[in-house]
Image (cartoon, rainbow, N blue to C red; front, side, top):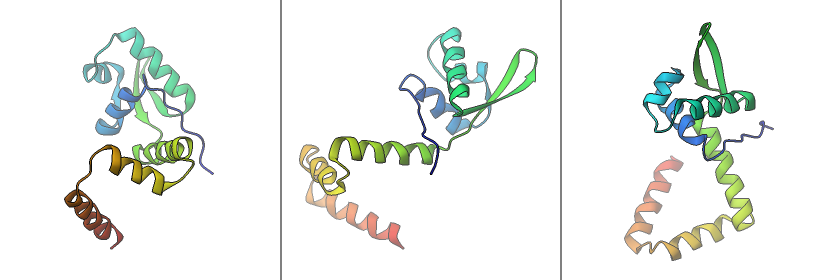
Length: 121
């Protein structure tokens, strides 16, 4: 079984930048985000301690950061946790709730069914 992936809401923007851009230094990450340098360093340190981000030293004061967890693995884990926590693991309840609450049209459903069929091939 895969190790539990734990990424706090405050850490997620950093992960999204790393997933999109790959390996970056902290100034490069900061250039892609709003916030201050001190907070960024704290969040990066936490992500490294959790094992979600890898840090490799370039020189004495500079590190290059890279995701140690893929975005796909994270999304899959979060989806499963959400499904279990909110809908007791029922995909049917989740989909029915989404269709009812988001005013999904018959055309939307037909398009979704087409997309599902294409994915199965």
